[in-house]
Amino acid sequence: MRKQFPRHDCRACVAACPVQAITATSSTPTINELDCLQCGRCLFVCPADALQNLRPETRRYTASTLVAPFSTLEPSVEELLMWHQQHGIRAVEMEMDAFPGWVRAVATLNIRLRALNAPVWQILPPPPKAINTGRRHFIKASETDVKSATVHTGRRARRQAFSAISEYQLSLDQGQCTACGACARVCGERALSLSEVALTFSSSSCTGCNSCAVVCPVKAVRIEKQLSENRVQRFSWIQKSCRCCQRAFYTFDPETKRCAVCQRHQYGMREA
Figure 1: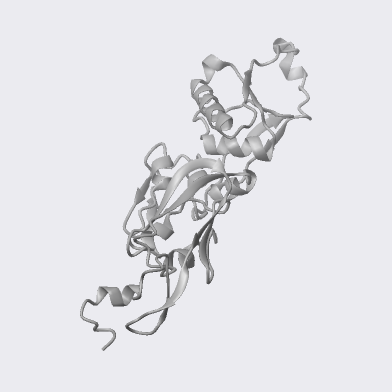
Figure 2: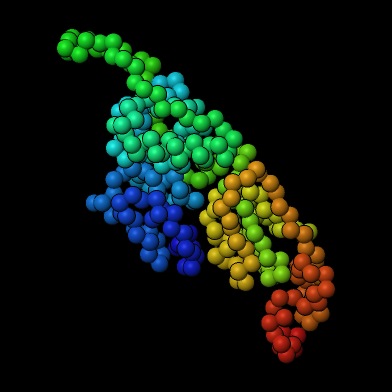
């Protein structure tokens, strides 16, 4: 997005990196491979799935519970949301004192899950060991019910996983909007669409990339982060013929008689 739109201000991966291994330049973010922990946090916040050569953490689980071994760095809430939806995880089996970061992550996750009206997670104590540790080299514990997996990454995957809830809403200043259609043409998720009667926004498809706001020449578009039920917003406009240049144009104001271009020419230069 930064390559396509020089004014783009997306810094999602930069903000998510726990060791500041990602630097945002004027054209594209740069990853310092020496500092990178390969934790994959940046993967879960990218609105365009642009990051490559990185994989999310492989974790172990049994039934609906994540089990040891655990990573030293706790997972992000965005990753845990995907475990919740993709694998049906509802608990973590661990000693709370040994992994305080994970405890915080689960607590933050539960706040998000309550906002989504979804079941929250529990932290379960490990079961007592049934194996004589003094003879462990003679006995191999069965782990047939323990699986290893990863989850899908990116905001697109999260939109599909939580299809009933949207994370972003569109705010449109109809008084400023010139109905040029640039916002819909650059929307990679097709959350914005144009027709002869309206500009339509589908919140279920929006990943919050903010490209529509970046390209708007009059700053009439704003994407706001807000959890809510999916909805379709229709901003109805009307088609008119410009009094000056005679070209067809769209407007939200039925009293408008000139197109946006002619309005900028105070002395009728386009008409001449």
